[in-house]
Image (cartoon, rainbow, N blue to C red; front, side):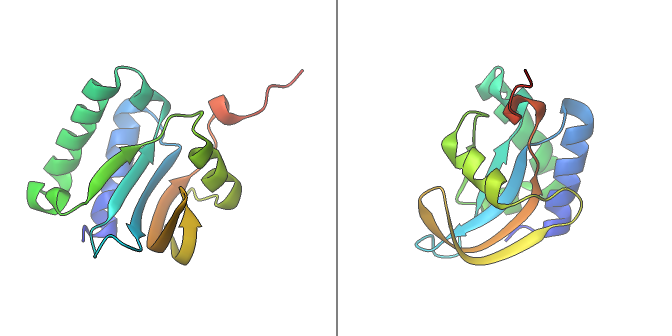
Length: 130
């Protein structure tokens, strides 16, 4: 598993370059056999998604190492209008320190273990003020 402090560094450095993440966390699905998913959401990831994701993976690999990055099951990106993102942001708010969760359910999946490094609504997710 990737060390949480290294992932935090990835999040902070990429945020400084590209903009804040709405969600940044590691999730271990019940059936995943110790292969973690990195789940991320950020407004800048939605624009030119493939290129932005490629740049993110390249930056992450330079910090955590390619071998550690390849130890992940997958990297999942969620758009700002994804109901799964809204659900997790209604449940969890994290900005400064990682939140560790055990035996919960997100994304319609049973999650054995999770580390949420950031879960904060962005302006795009806030209801419009009239």
